Image 1 (cartoon, rainbow, N blue to C red):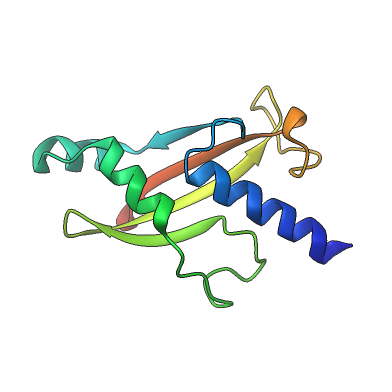
Image 2 (cartoon, one colour):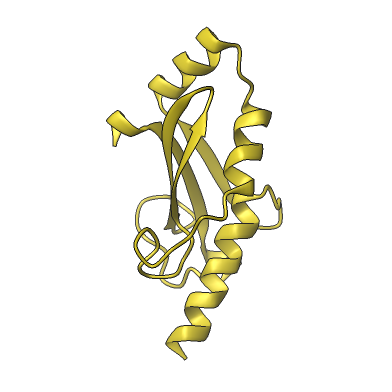
Length: 115
């Protein structure tokens, strides 16, 4: 049962990261990433495309198998992205991240030095 639960969370995280609007949540970029986009002329669309296409998951960087963290290079800069699952009021963790009606995901994208 735990393995199938993890697979569901993994698939929902992947769908959210790839822009599936059926999976509720929001994307947050740090001030460092905002500055990078402004100074280097990058777009959120291009950044989300890189995050969405990330597939370098290993046991070392994804020990729980939930596809909730990654490191990418964008505009010649290393960035981390992280997905957290909250309840629908964003004041605590989701009781069950496999259930869309009670879970809102937050994808945070940050410079590696902001982690």
